[in-house]
Length: 252
Image (cartoon, rainbow, N blue to C red; front, side, top):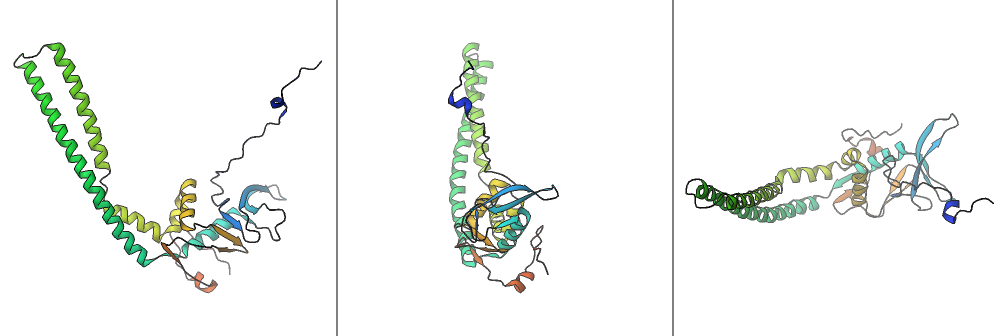
């Protein structure tokens, strides 16, 4: 009689499907413009046997399924993002808010660091007095001296680490604002140079209700309030200045 196996042994082994794939950052974020279902991404084989990556609609009853190369969809996405322009009023409020928040944070950080530095000076002074009591005045035996010295040195090391952490929080406000404004002014370039996780986070910030795509055109229900979307026709798009490293790629 053949050996019996449990139900688990008879199940086919299926490897879990990876949803996070750096080749398809827009997967599940962009939706089909015909059926409004999220696009997926996969690699296909052409009639010549060559592998190519593409995004496509997976809804079988979709009246006009989207199927497009990953390069084309992502290039169109970058061109679409290039049309975003920071809202001037938002930029002003953003700068003011950041400065206020920074000054508050900096004051708290500075106060903490000054407190820690006072404690550090006290501990170093205690260590100096301990050495003096042991070496010059013989006021303490060696066993107690070593025990007390080791405790003080550990406290000094802990305080030094905390002071370094406090200093790291005291960033330059101009560097922070430059970074933020670069993001707002160059969202397409930042997206292009980011890793998968950063791209997906930025996509959600830029288009909180996602995007639809059909016939080479992106549409969205809402952009982030920090941006205005330029309404540009095909002729105007040709005149948009390309961001560094991003070519619009419009065809004549």
